[in-house]
Length: 194
Image 1 (cartoon, helix red, strand yellow):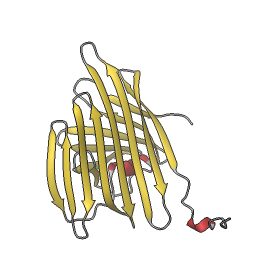
Image 2 (image 1 turned 90 degrees about the vertical axis):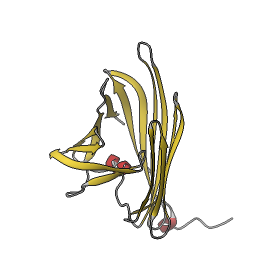
Image 3 (image 1 turned 135 degrees about the vertical axis):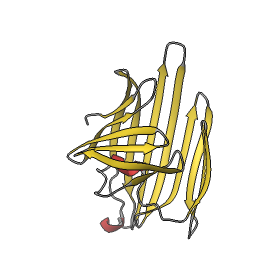
Image 4 (image 1 turned 45 degrees about the vertical axis):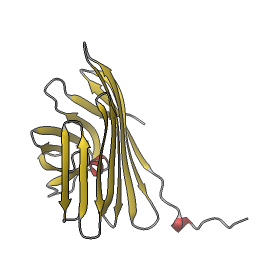
């Protein structure tokens, strides 16, 4: 029988946040954010969203999964899979030693780029703490580029990208509400009680 693994080598317990997704006050789905620290300097963030809603003449189905692997505070690999009633889509950003290869093929959005600057902050980070002072942008995994971040007031941040606006609301440093602004109806994402 092998001896037990020393405590220092065991990964820390995962931090998990559960959210409900609402449209017009009706719960239409869930979102789960997870942060898992591995042994050493690696941290993996994941975000899973599952939405199913029927509007009067339109049915919306979105399953969305983001996995971001950071090492020493730098994004090494980001993958996004989206399965919708409009088809299947994906995005990927991978660090190649001196640059990222970025390819986003999403619904009505295709983007290919090379990014030379290390990515140190992504949308998944927003789920686990309020952005640090001076954090001006967050890597938007789905799009393969960046949201501009600005703080409106204490605990309230705006994320803007190409006319799209999301609002992140924090209480005591914990993300409690996201408002995804949409011309038809806003999506409200609320932290669920544990």
